[in-house]
Length: 142
Image (tube, rainbow, N blue to C red):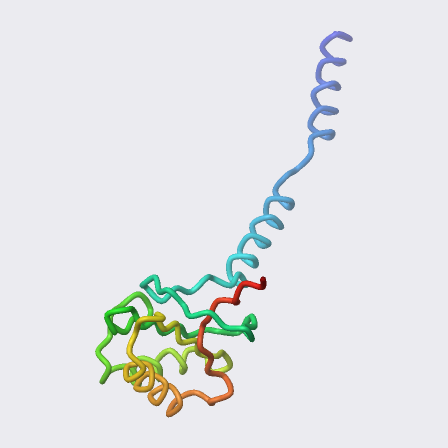
């Protein structure tokens, strides 16, 4: 009988010594949700452009709207090709979603200045002009 008693006593100690992982898993799950919600996602315009070089290129961090103009003068916003007449409406929609962000125009070096000017005019009607930028690449130093 003493043997049986010690066996029961040993199983009670094992249960008391077990670590409950539920609170730790709850904390990890909440942290995962926090990081997913606060992560900034990379925005893409939808087309690859060859940006012109510039001596005064500077990094802009708060760009939330990207407008790309390809070499054949097609305009891309949010991975969709957009007609020049619909540029303003698309910029208004995206600017309403995040009004504090800026706008970057990614014009190909072989695109028309006429298309660039049309996009710039539409952007200036919606976004504060100081928040509008032209994407360039830094010129190589010799």
